[in-house]
Image (cartoon, rainbow, N blue to C red; front, top):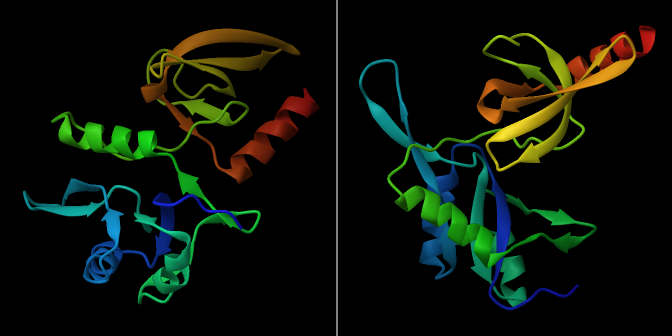
Length: 178
C-alpha cells in the first residue's frame, strides 16, 4: 500500500465526537482539520457542529496510520480497495477558503449525474427527473420522461433534492410501466 507523505486522510469517527477526537489527535501531535459550522437550537442559542458529521481530516505519514486508528472515538480510516482514501490539498484549501470567506455555508448532499431528483420549489415543484448535467455549480439540467421522451430543463441546484434509494426504485417502476 502506497501512501504519499503528509497525505490528508479521512478519519471516520463516532457521531458527535469529532471535537473530542480532534483534541486527541492534536495531543498526539497530528495535523488535523475539522471544519465546523454554526447551527441554531430552537431558541436563539447557537452551537458549533462538524460540517461533515462523523468525519475529520488528518495529515499524516504512512507509519502513523496504525496509531491514528487506535485513538479513542476513531472508527476507521476511510479507504477504497484496501487503500486509504487521500484527499487532495486543493480540496482541503477550498473548504478552508469557504469557511474563512464570511459567506453562509452549510452541508449539502452530493448530487451526481444519473441520480433521481425532485424539484423542491418554483413552477416545477414536485417534478421528478434524472440529473443529467451540472453546469457552473449553480444550475443543473434534468431529464424528465414524458410519453417515453425526455425534456431537458435548466433549474437551480438550490431547488432540487436527491431522492433516496426507495424513491429511485419507485421512479424506475413508474418509468418502465409507462
